[in-house]
Image (cartoon, rainbow over all chains, first blue to last red; front, side):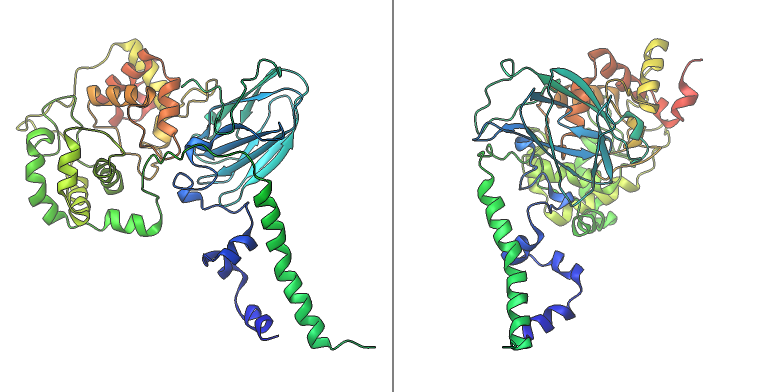
Length: 165
Length: 253
């Protein structure tokens, strides 16, 4: 009762500023600090790109920032369930796929998770669909879907992408 | 039998608090793939505290300290050699971040690393404050290599297009959206008075990963998308002082 009374007196936003294990659990895994993505956690640069989970499913992690998606080219196999996790480092972006009417809203401090599956090999453009600033119209990345046998056999600590570098 | 309302409320609130705990724990266990060894590009995160540290320097003390930078970076912040960067008029956070990255060896330079290590955290902010206040207009008395000779018209056309509109087809954003004068991103220095040789070398280093201290990889990604000719065209464009004019005005019609 006392606990409830105390909790009611704290504005809900205050919870987001307290760094305790309990509050970390309350916030859940989809809360990230947009300013320190590169320092720790899921979105450090060595963890970006396509990862293969133990059950064979695919997880893709991406950062949207002014005015680029990183990695710049995503490589996924066809016919395999894909979990796409995107977050923003600065403004609100929207990740859309060419030839579809599908888009994922990307908001700073929050991870947007989507489940996708591409039946056939092919290539999609992924432009930003939310005006995000002066370079918005050039913010575009690619998604390359290859057949399952062409997809590299990623080890658990390996991340794949098809960016130029 | 009627339950005690206080007890039921307490039970409900405890259950309510425990529910996300359980959800959080299960989702944590489900994350199976082992992440690769973490590589940190730079220790800097642009929080308000960091910005206050980066821009709170004392320019007068910085002026005294900067006398040891004169030999390479020029007495007025314009370098005598085109391969060394000009520092005059570059914003405080940009200079501060590069010095911090040299100090923590996130950006590798055999020349700058010992110099940056000899400065205290306070000194770095002071030096940044001093150079940010230097004017960037021409001085015929000063021994500087800026501006370099004008590039060929084809290179001007190529570069002014990349600077003003980028290349949407390849996903290259315009340079001026972060490096000014249209907009500035924190940590992205102004390029309008930068030397050509320095710019082209940095673009090449970003492309082949020799330099990798850009937070969330914007410059490594862009530099790897640019062709060698485009890198040279952009460097010549800025190095000849065309970057001081609006990009649309420099494009040949």
